[in-house]
Image (cartoon, rainbow, N blue to C red; front, side, top):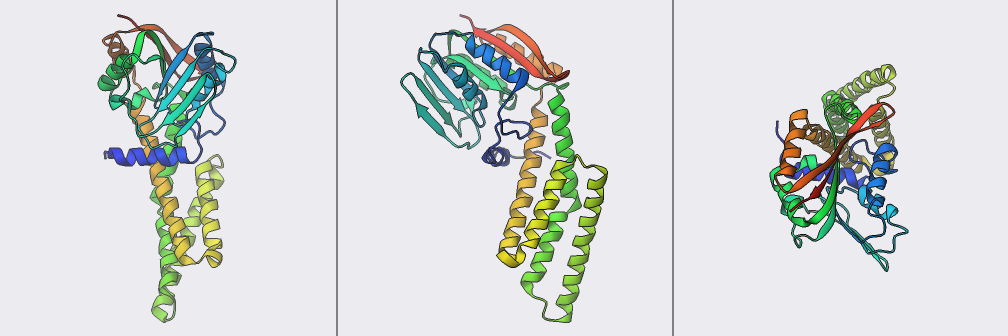
Length: 320
């Protein structure tokens, strides 16, 4: 079943609002290892020359910030602009020779800016989500003559794909258990009151069904203690219900509804992630699209960390 663009956009906003600094596994320390090394080497290759950088699908600005780190001792002018289609939190800072900005609600396909304005355009796990024919044509227009670019993309054999698929399966299992619905039903019975025999019976039924669901999920967790999402979900549900006397059933119901929505957003985001991963054929199509828009391929490298593939780095430059 297809998901409309607004829901996808909302799911990514909810994700970035958690403070995540990576687009795939929710890390909050920024990219490291071979990914960070690749980006630092790329940005440092510009040495002490001016840079006007556009980072596409910037998310929380992880790559924009690596560029800032690489240029910290550079005296030449540095302009960094990160854009994202989702409603990310904007950020802006300036010093004597550096301007830095993150801007949301700015899909690259329709991004309005002066042509040939940037001499560097980048994207980390981002260009895959765009409409290539429009996005790359726009990137070519925005990139100055002899300007350079680097995309790091997920591929079918990426270790990250395996991890995300596991996360998606875990999230779907929690949804299918209906644990949130049962918890909400339980709280709704309490909200209606238990002043007669009928309402007491409704309470007992709701309580029994909820306890049964908890028991099944806890048994599953015992056999799969690496299921972090399930562990966190059960812990949160326990806390919400334990704090009902403190916050009241109405607030508890709202907390449960918000948690269920967060789970649904997580499923939508993970599915969007997997749908956007490049197959061998789509990677070839992306490369051809670059070539057809005056963007010459400089290099294509598979990135590996701890013997695992973590993506493909495609470097290009604009030719006239």
